[in-house]
Image (cartoon, rainbow, N blue to C red; front, side, top):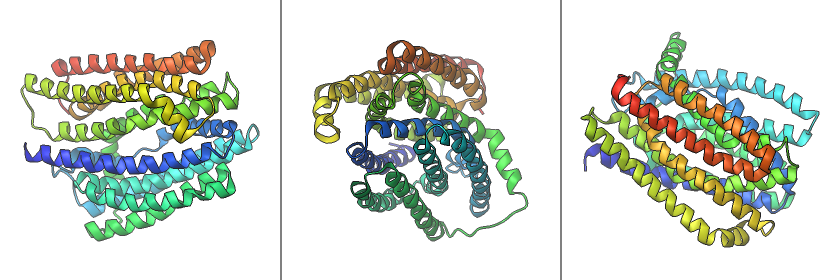
Amino acid sequence: MSNLNLKVAKLFIFSLVDLVVNKLGRYIGILILINVVSRETIGVLGIATGYLAFIGYLAIAPEQILLRDYPKGKHGNLNQEISAFGNFWAIRSVLTLLAGIVIFLVLRDENLVLAVVFIGLLIQRLLEGFTNLIQLVFYVDFKQDTVAKINFFNNSFLLVTFLLIFLYQSIYAYVAILTLGEFIFCVIWSIQLRKQFNFVYLFSSGWLSLVKKNLLEFTLWYHLSNATMNVVQNIGPVILSFFASLAVVGEYTIALKIAGFFLIVSQIMQKASFLHFANEMILPEKSTIKTLFAHIKIYGFLSLLAIIAFAFFGKLLIFSFLTKQNVDLLYQLVLIMLIGIFIFNVTRPLLAFASAKYSLRKGFIFVYIPSLVSSLVSYFLGTAYLGPFGLALAMIINYFTLFLLSLGFVSYATRKIPKN
């Protein structure tokens, strides 16, 4: 096994541990919340998350260029680059918060709880953007073992504070814990950045030019692609709220959270696959395609195992660890969603390969935009005629459409489009 393959394998293992710990902490918080608040309140959480997905288009992160360039040694002065990215994060956060306040004022008249939850989660996401910036530096330097250790401590703290939800029995407590916890994590990661990389903030008059160059060259299209997929995955509860009660939206939100747990492994694998493809030497076409399809087989096999496991043990897991209400409904919804997730996971290597090897701008135009349009149309039609089940079935259609678009783009790009 080559040195690159060993590094990527280690990166994947520690990234998986880190993400599982992170997701598990959040899922335990959701689990507690589900058992102490009404389904209507859970529906509010799902709708707020959907609105956050749309505002996520503003959360452009130019530091993502490090994924492609850092391991190749193409980056410049690290202190200067991180400082520039930090400056951009601060300005971006202020502008995003202003947009969030406008949405808050609109939502406040219809549902004050929804408005407060939305703005609270938005602040938490903005703070998370800062910690993600720092963690990315560790990630591209193959220090994911350090990230996993620090996040294990952070999430252990979060888990303990989640117990306060039992005391206050309020979604406000859940949002406050996430937001205050993220602020503490920002402080911890700032200390670690200085300690591990001897980081010193450097202000340069050319920081904006550096950010602009990275945005136009790579990050803008990378971000827009990811933001689009985030909308496709999370906008469902918002659309369902136009046709169903908050209680029904709450049930669908719970099912979506359960199904989302099965995205953890593939999420990390896609990032590791991108890093692998981006740093791989140019190979003969047959060797390149062989590597790509090897990734697809691995993703597909793991996803199929997840479906089989849930089909046999899903009801028991929901009843024993999550909720005793509407178990059959949740089981059926999740099972339908997992079929869609299987197709999406098989598509991930194609997306990673296309992002690493070919034009991100053309990929966004010819793959992600049609997928978004298809998703919004099918979500509305499916929900209008079949309610939550129609929405879940639309996921299968959407992800299959994404698969065909991705496969077509990679097939065409392999023959026609020059490497970035």
